[in-house]
Length: 356
Ligand code: ZN
Ligand code: ZN
Image (cartoon, rainbow, N blue to C red; front, side, top):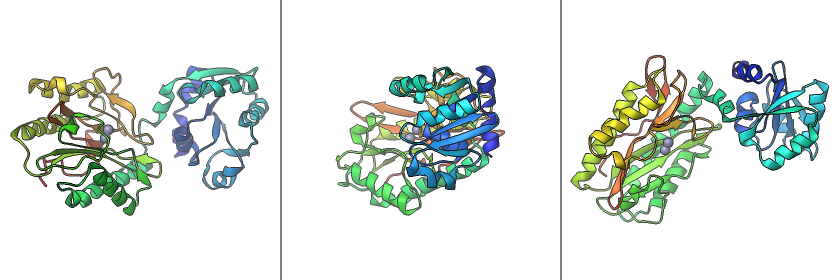
């Protein structure tokens, strides 16, 4: 499995004529060697890998790291990296520019003098775009925990309960069902607050007739889920039904069209043009979706400005919304795995307009 993941680095070795790549982003390190701690570095060449950590992580690294030599280093990690680079004659090393601070870069340039350092942009993170079978299994499991947790807390949602109480009940339920934690600060936006696409749960109390947008996800084994429902607490006004139906149809249209080869921009356009045709285009301001995996937001992005196309194994969200200032909003979001000829929806909470 790791061999397959590391084979995705070949295009970077070739394109930039690199002898090795130095990884400092912990997501990429975990992906490429299995280490799940919070500090370390990984140097990979086409036929050698070395993981660097300090003494706090030596035992954990011995337990987790696969396919790499483990080198415990002192206070200045880059000195240990320089030793290995000299030993193996690595005279041209790529590094993750988008995950390197200016301070770290200067230290690296100082200690690795004589070695050409090549900035690799965030396209390097694209090695994680297409998930392998083991990742898909974890993503399905974490999505299921989150979806079932939401169903469990629906009975708790009633007038005079606060948005933050709903968020806390949901997080507790996820942990009880085996999640390591929440994937992000949940959005619970009720009534007029629903017009804020990223309205974090507040102390506002739920009122009868409120639409409530709940955007939630769990995390487990380094992976995340992402899902949104919009429900009603008691019967809402007629306009709420209209907006919910438009968003739901836009969401369904996009999911029906998912397959390898469709451009990310075109997929966004399918949902966007439907919402436009219904007269609500100005109230759908964000992209249709994004990749999800070790990061809650990762590549690819689905928006009018996106490049590229979907590929089998990508895991993406589809999340159209309509947000009307002074009224409220609706968003519906599912996470799907792009399959050979379509997609599998892995988030399972009911996307009807539930009236509690
Ligand atoms: Zn979300
Ligand atoms: Zn999302």
